[in-house]
Image 1: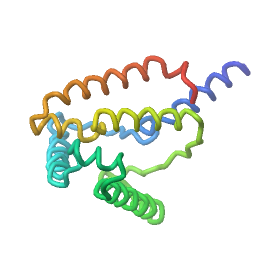
Image 2 (image 1 turned 180 degrees about the horizontal axis):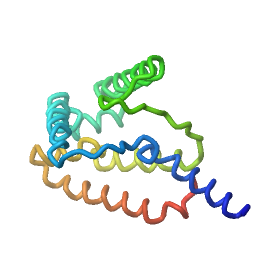
Image 3 (image 1 turned 45 degrees about the vertical axis):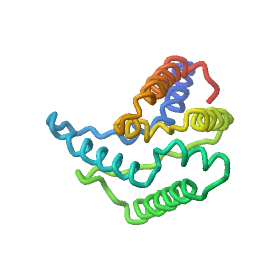
Length: 167
C-alpha cells in the first residue's frame, strides 16, 4: 500500500511539471474549431517578421550585447506576462468557455539551469528560438528546417528519457 502511494506521489510530482495535464481543457470541439489558432499563429508570425524578432542578425546582436532591440521585446513580453497572471489571479478569470484557470506551484531545481543553458546555447548557435522557427521557414529561410527538425527531435528525446533525467 505504501509503495503504491509513493508511486502515485512521484507520478503526480513529475506530471505537475506539465501544465497541460493540469490546465487541459476537457471540452470537445469540431475539427474546424482550431482554425482560430491557425489565424492567430499566422498573425503572430507576421508580427515576428515585422518586429525583426526572427532576424538571425538581431539575435546575434543580442548575444553580443550590441543592441537593446531583442532585450526590449523580451522584457516587454515578461512584463505583459506578469501583469496578465496578476490580473487572472486577482479577478479569478476563466477561459472563454467558463473553465477555471489554475496555476500549479513549481519547484526550482538544477535541471532548469542545465536546460536554460542548453536552450541559450542552441539559440545563440542557430540564431533561432523555437517560437520563431516556423516564421523563419515561412519567410523562405528553408535552411532553418534543419533547426526545426532538430528541435522536434530534441523534444522527442527529452520525452523518451524524461524519467531518467534530473528534475
